[in-house]
Length: 283
Image (cartoon, rainbow, N blue to C red; front, side, top):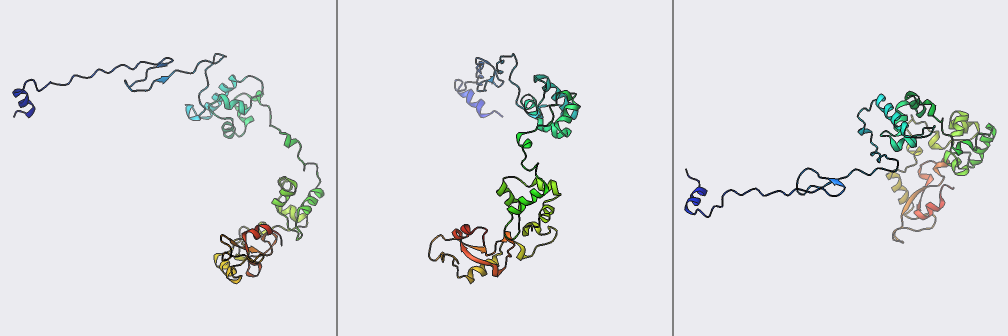
């Protein structure tokens, strides 16, 4: 059976131009300083490699441990030795290795249990400068104090009720409580040796489930009861959302929770946010 196209070509010989000739694809010329990318017309040129630096070396590749084919211990040590050959000077520090190595110094130290151990396994123990001692480590304010002086600092940071917290010590003296833990074995032992008491949150046993009275958070049911009892008014300034638009009411501990106060109905009252923030942790 003759196709319709063949019939039209027989009736009108000049109507059918025949098969279309393939269009010539112009060759993409490489720009100056680069080479041609595969793909013909419309493909983006590949940039030329970076020029050599003053020392004759090219810019190091972007650091990525996945660019290293052998990521075993032997491969990492070989990479460490290669980076050490590019670094001049006797001590070999981690920040210098970070600039030329595919593996960061911190990653190498974690794998081999320390920077000194990694250099020893790589045969570079002679280039280890030792542990870095900062100026803050040399001038520790609590190193020269006796046990009695440390306990006196705890007593001065305690409240009138004899409760001391790590945050109170940090705010008063500006340092952490690691010295007390290292000197007396634990923070609890240091507080007891000073004749003080722990805060309710630190004194409770984490294995024992706390009762609602020992929790700082006020339940929704108890909060509603306190607001309804106080007629939705601040007990200090008398403000309420009915009088001033945007007034936020909060339930406050009359005796602060940080000083041993309980979350009970007789120890709670309604305050506006401004009065509650102004009261703080004071009785």
